[in-house]
Image 1 (tube, each protein chain N blue to C red):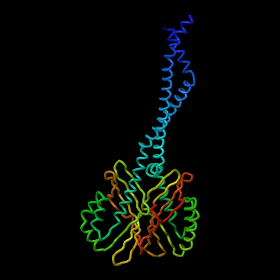
Image 2 (cartoon, rainbow over the protein chains, first blue to last red; image 1 turned 60 degrees about the vertical axis):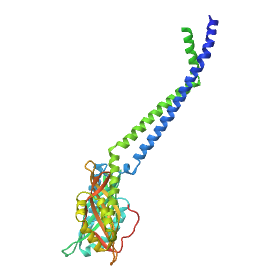
Image 3 (tube, rainbow over the protein chains, first blue to last red; image 1 turned 30 degrees about the horizontal axis):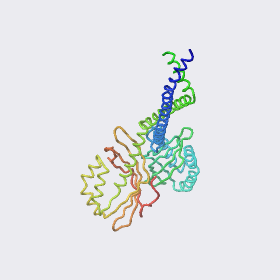
Amino acid sequence: MTTPTAAQLAPTETVAKPPRRVTAVATLVALVIVVVMALGLAAWFRGEANQLTGSAAASNDALVDADANAQVSAQVREAVQRIYSYDYARLDDNERAASAVITGPYVQSFHQDFARVRDLAPAQQAVVVATVPALAVKALDGDRAIVLVFLDQQAHQGDQAKPLVASGRLSVTAQLVDGRWKIADAEPF
Amino acid sequence: MTSIASTDTSLGRRFLGGPLRTAILAVAVVAVVAFAAMGWFGVSWYRAAHGRSLAVGMDRDALLGDAQRAMVTLNTLDYRRVQDGLTLWEQSTTGSLLSQLRANRDAYARAITASAAVTSARVLDAAVASLNDSAGTAEVLVGVDVTSQSEQGDPSCAHRRVQLDMVRAGSAWKVGTLAPVGDAYSEPGPCSPGTSPR
């Protein structure tokens, strides 16, 4: 029983062995090629995706996030008007009100500027009303925003009937602190 | 025959049961992982490319660039090359501003020639105030400094605040209306060259 089987087996083995092996090796090679191609495509897709999401356009939410944009606009407008308005008779109130809407390095420079106002405003009986005729959010990224602000100041002095009008352009950096956008920097240009 | 077939299979198993079989299995697992990664990054690319937010962001930045270039063009003129300058003005405008420029072209040309002035402009800062993507309209604020140098007099610098209504014209944005925000503040002497625009 065993001998004929073994005799039969021998030729079968020599014939069947190479194709089996060849098929297996071919499968392995094909799989490796597939892996290399898939990894190559994955790397390419990843690169393209990162390039898009990491681009300047994608990392700036100005006008993209409409709600945040509106919030920045409204609060920066209010804050700037508060900071640049004062009444010689209510300077303490003005400085306190402005202090609530400033943050970071701007705190110090604001109080320095306001010290000059304290020196000059009472003698001139100056009442300055600041308005923002237009502003636009230039950049918005998380808790930081850069806002282009057009600022008008109307200065009434003592008994002079005609107010002095000054117009300015500001680049304002705003920082979101405890849910409120505060002025972190304001640079005239 | 059956015995041969069964022996054959067992032989095949013996060959594939070796390191070759292990290698195939391992590479197959890697292939599945590689396909998953490919699918994942493919989808994230597609999402990034077709997301509304990126489209708006890119639109905003393209618009801002066009507005800044238009602003420089519309504040630049040279009385020695009036017609070229006016043609450039017309190329960067559309709608009511373009009609106005065309209707008054001769009058403008005469006035510029008579002024014997050369102006140059520099945009210091600009930002998009609003953007209606579907309507193709937008508002842009621009702070621009314009140096005027007339043949006889001394140069002067005007610090201007401008609101532009932009209109999409094909692949570019053009100026539909141009409105100063308050009066320009002028001072003698050329505008400071300053650093590059913000």
